[in-house]
Image (cartoon, rainbow, N blue to C red; front, side, top):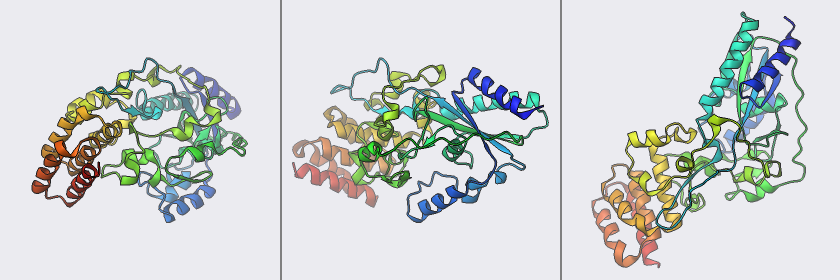
Length: 379
């Protein structure tokens, strides 16, 4: 079979199965990426969530023998939350970033990629293939850039001409030598809106992200969030997308044509207070299908406490005191103590913190109780 015809058939079929854009590149190494990855590690910018072996991220043949081509796929996701519930005193709500709306994109893209592979194998049964969606060794954005799906923007996202940067990416490695597509021209120009809008300076220069300082990363950690980020996360429970929202190429777009990407407003903008006392079962039932649930319950509960402190929500104080005295997890006890200091008043909350301090044995929690006491006494 002629591979140029098969390529065109794949492009046409991809549109029928919910893939919005597709591009093809070679299986050659991503040598320029290697330099960036090494520099990222040396400067302490890596998150620790990345695939650990840099060579496996750079050399596709380490993931699959005889890889000749990589197919990059992109699926657009919504940016506007229709019928969003109101966030009001006494019923404060948190927010999941747009990348965690709808069904977990790992599952959604994997299903599409598998359909593409099945289509490919029907025509070339002897072809080898391997799908990757975020969790594979290769860097999805580097593949998409070289495959002409979009250009690598100053905010480090891939911007597509048709859908902006609000797209999920996945890859199919194959032994078929498809003709590669040309990379797109970088159209960011002199614009620096994403860099200017980053609240922590995590975008240290165009295309360079200090992941450790990114609020999206901070919402996904499981330990105490550093003080300098706690109030900057606002009401976000997971993720952060300001650097995408301000991008001119994303202005006014909202691609909600995929049913499995549509968000449930009550789930992605949930009431904060009930989150604090959720069981594991309740958490999985409500949030388990979201990509933002991948780190488990504790980070979301910690972030919900921070969000309630952000709102200075006094109705949360009884629950926060219960967590401080009864929760078995130091991060939750300590964050609750800090939040009590932010929300409460000395005359009503000092005794609760002092009593907790007498019983507490964890030095990090004691430090958080002291922070809470200092905030109360400074009011």
